Length: 165
Image (cartoon, rainbow, N blue to C red; front, top):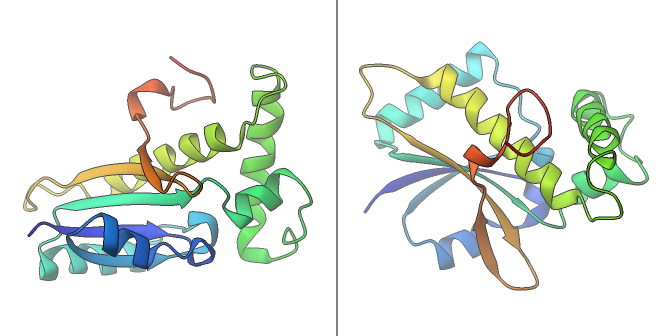
């Protein structure tokens, strides 16, 4: 059975859904809205987990109605939480930039996809080690109403801006 590490938001309540629908030997790391910062200590812990549990895949997952993305795009009630400040600023900047491209569209899923892709690429650079077996990194958005996971296709996004290639 393939061993899989998921980065999820605790407010999405995805652990049981992932266990039920994506049958693997699963491990989870949580942070609000996947706003996790990859400091040296955390990277050391992730690398240790990868080695000790023989993790073969890592996936960043958020629900399409994630509480923190929704709040960052609308009311910003949690903007005063110090650990979310940078995350909220990022989301707000992407909303402003993407409104120029995606008029009158629900951009939440697009921004979530872009953000998860960036987090995946960021982690990939930090854990690349020739001594590890290659790790498959991916991102998914859970569509709650349809009860499906949609793969984020990383090759659709330019990494330096929120625009489609």
